[in-house]
Image (cartoon, rainbow, N blue to C red; front, side, top):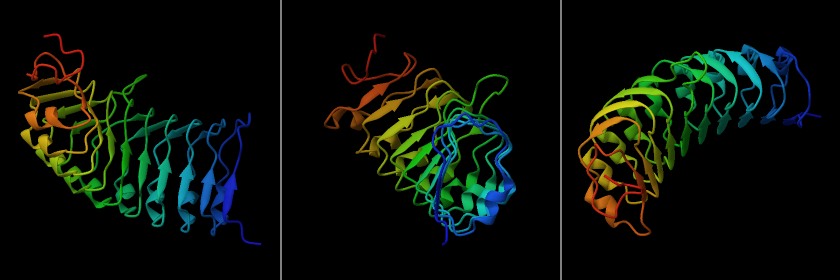
Length: 246
C-alpha cells in the first residue's frame, strides 16, 4: 500500500519532527497542525515531491524554513503559521508555481519579501502578518513590484511588520484582490491612485503607517461599500472611510 495522506490529530507530542518523513515519497497530504513539534523542520521534507498540501501550523517549529521546500513543485497549500520560524522567506518558495495559499502568519520572520514572489501566479491567499513580535522586527524592506503579477490574488495581509517605502502602484494590477491589509508598518508616501482599479475590494486597512495623499474616489463608489481604514494623514471623502473622525 502506498501512503498518500498523513494526518496527526491534536496531541501532546513534544519532540522534533522525524526526518524519516522524507521516505514517504508518494505522500500528497501532510497535516500536523496544532501539535507540539519543536526544533527545525527537517530538510528531508523536500523529498516529498508529490505533496500538494503541507499544513504545519500551531506548533513550535523554529529556525529557518528549509530551502528544500522549494522542491515541492506540486504544492498547492503551504500553511506554516503560528510557529517560531525565523530568518528570511527563502527565495526557493517562489519556485512553487502551483501554490494557491501561502500562510506564514505569526512567526519571527525578517528581511524582505522576495521580488520573485511574482512567480506565484496561481496564488490567491498571501498571509505574512504579525511577524514583528518578541525580538523580531518582522518582515522589512519595500513591497516588491512583483506583487502586481499576482492577478489571482484575493487576500494580501502583511500587517504588523516593518515594511517601509511606498505602496507599489503595481498592487492596482491585482484585479481580483478583495482584502488588503497593510496596517501597522512603516510605509510612507501617497496612497496610489491605481488602487482605485480594485473593483472587487471589500476591505482595505492602511492604518498605523506614515501615509499621505487621498483614498481613490473610485473605491468609495463600490457596492457593497468597501470597509476602508486609514489614518488622519490620508484624505478621505466624507462617509467613505470607517471611523474616520478627522
